[in-house]
Image 1 (cartoon, helix red, strand yellow):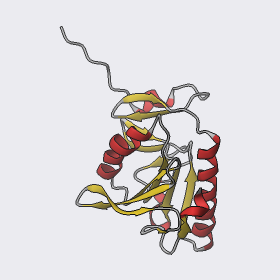
Image 2 (cartoon, one colour; image 1 turned 120 degrees about the vertical axis):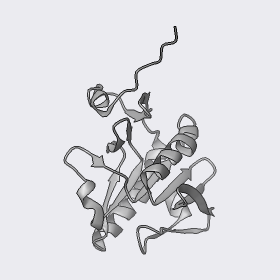
Image 3 (cartoon, rainbow, N blue to C red; image 1 turned 60 degrees about the vertical axis):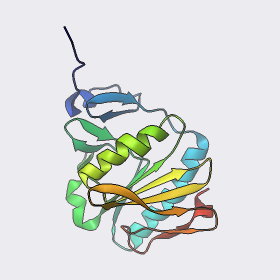
Image 4 (cartoon, helix red, strand yellow; image 1 turned 90 degrees about the vertical axis):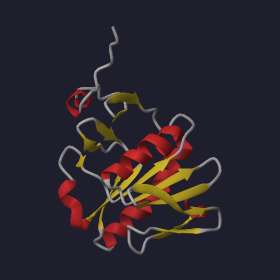
Length: 180
C-alpha cells in the first residue's frame, strides 16, 4: 500500500508556531532559517531606498520579510522584499498579501538558493509576479528576471559598478555597490 503525505493548506500554515519561520510550497511546510547579518544589511540597504522611492512617488508599498504572501491555498511565501503597486493595493489585507506582488526580491543563502532559483521562481511565474530580483551576496551579483511567455527569464545580470533599473518600480535605480 502506498501512502502519501497530506498536502497542507493555508489554514494549517496559519496554525504554525509564531516563534518559527515557515513557508508553504505546494502543500509542503518548510522551515526557513532566520537571515544572517550580511543578508539583513543587504535587505535593509535595498529595501529602505525602495520604500522611500515608492512612497515619495506615490507608486505603491514595499514590504520586508516576514510578510506572508498567499499565492494559493497551498502556497505561502515570505520574500525578503516585495512591492505592490498602487493600482493593485486591493491584494493587501490586514493579515497578509493575497495574490502576486508586482516585484519580489530574494537574497540567496546557502540553505535557500536552490529553492529561490527553482521552486519559487516557477511559483512566482505561475502566479504572475512581473519582476523578480535574485541577489547573491557572496559574489555581489544581482539577476533581474522578467515575466515573459509565462516564465521568469533573466533579462539582466548586474555586477559591482553596475546600476540596477527596475522595470516595475518605475524610475527606481540603485547601484549594485550600494546594496553590498
